[in-house]
Image 1 (spheres, rainbow, N blue to C red):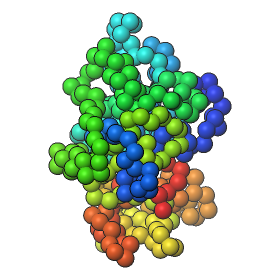
Image 2 (tube, rainbow, N blue to C red):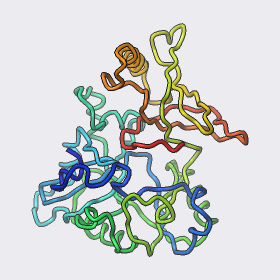
Image 3 (cartoon, one colour):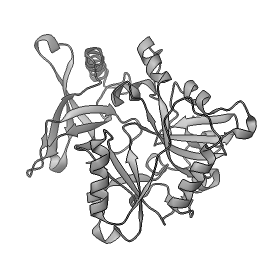
Image 4 (cartoon, helix red, strand yellow):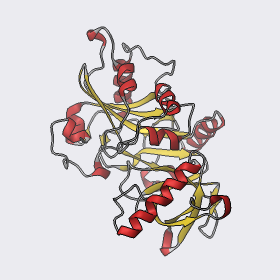
Length: 330
């Protein structure tokens, strides 16, 4: 079931890349589109984008950016339910980051993967119990269905705070706090402070703009630490020595027909690397890339320290599998 089917609509009500409003890197937004408004600044947490869809007081489900339903969300659901039915969440679609302080984003992504079939390990179950939501936006059910809300971002945020106030969360994490900024210098300074505090970066929303599904630009912009791109895997490289029988590197499609080779980063275990290679071999043998979860054709976040003047990524590492994206950044 995807997010539209949960709302009683056709599963193809909107394309996967048009399900929700998207965020664009600040430097990629045309100058003519920036700074024509006051911007609301929010910390960008290192988590999974999550739609919390509330149809009724006890009819709540959790979905990815592209509308797929997350797995293993019983604990999250219980954290939002209140014993007093008068204090339940107001119906609507809440946007949040699904986070956990005790595991990497790659591990968290695997736990809540919509396609997960294996039972959680004890450690994964503990991570699941320690996961929490950081809310940052809200639209009504009808606005989400329509794909547009004329309600300004600052008003939506005010409504979000009002809606969440009666809920007693099982964790001590607060909802996102906002500052108002006017210039690019303010944004850069704010993001640098957030990164220094251990956050991933910052998101900036134009206060007077509505919400538009599929829009990626001046309405919502971000500055993040280091560099990251969501890239399509086009090749697999086996390791040698103690890494024999395991994936050593994944090869990704890059600009101008070039390729990027990146080793598996933090959060990917030796077991993961072994399973990934086995899946690749089976799928290659039978010429069926859907037979097992092969990395080929999948989109992964690739992190790097910086991009050189020649367009090369310095020390790229493979991050989480982006099952919530249908198109690569490059």
